[in-house]
Length: 225
Image: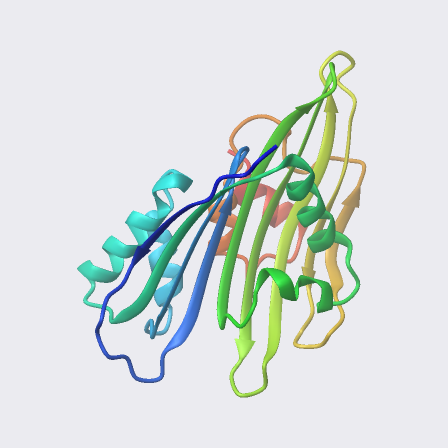
């Protein structure tokens, strides 16, 4: 199957001092939408930006983010928005890495040289006649300036659900690395789904509070409505 990539390049030519590189990635059932730009958001600015656009469809996130930057007179440059078709196996491989890899090394391909990266995945697809397979991921990845080390905070779940029997299986984890190369789980669950396979799961809400979420109960309270 041939993939087609639609790119939209929007550039603001303002000068920026002490700029950082920002990246936002949103994965749904069929596409990956990414937004990147250079700038210097004020303290707490990234969270405020996400709060402002949290009700946007993923396909409209780029417009929402750029509108927020303009409305708040925030200097930025090299604003790039991309949409790429997302294969199911790619989404599940992505979730497997974020939920189960022992070290940060294998995740570098998703970050590049970005200073601040936020990722949301809300993906489900039918598999065979009776099953639905999918994953949820919320991830915040921030570099320690001048050290090129990254602090990871990850909350996620992968799952498979059988429509005929109601059987469901999956794994859930709240993960961090505390600026080391190695991950450890603050809380985790195997085989019991914390987030439902169907229904509304507030992944953006998880991302907004990801620094303070350390237990399954807290994650479930925020994400499941």
